[in-house]
Length: 252
Picture 1: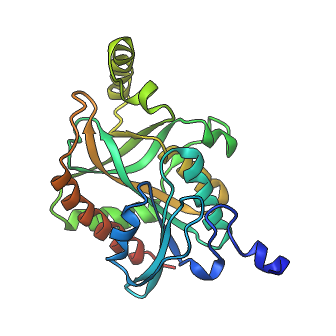
Picture 2: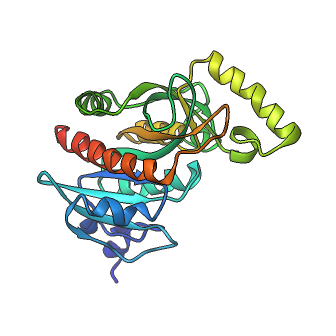
């Protein structure tokens, strides 16, 4: 392998410039790669590297790459950054988020921006730098969501690193502490929480790319009730279709 070929291949996700598309959908669960591939024409699966699965296919004449990062801001940002280095400039994270009223389980939640309570975004920009979604990408998503039948909400996400220490209390004093945090979340009018959005929005904007997040609300922040498997399966299909339609509607 020549030096030029080495620089043309991503360090961690292992794909080459020729194996990726014009835009990327970032997915947490690697199992969703097979399922979103069913919504693409001519899907190609490069070899898996470090458990990070990707697929590239065609949708409405556009080559789209879907890449799974697992969970958490550090690895999600690595996947975004490596795809950016391969030439991609549009990123949409899709997946799941904890619901905060008025969002309810099964609704879609779209990030206009995010509260930066993660650590990874600080490596891209100081804390005062805002985490803001791309206007054109969100306009395309709003148009597609408005044409659908599922209830959706747009607003500010909150992004934390500690799932069991900050977002989802298991029992006892830890649950009481998280209950106090939820009061702050409601006071700030957040619509959902996750572990990736603020880092991805900051990283993309600093790099010169556009990014946003669209999720299914799958856990009730108050009761910790989770969405059923059947309901999630139905929502996931709509999520894939909404994301792919919106991202291919964007101008180059």
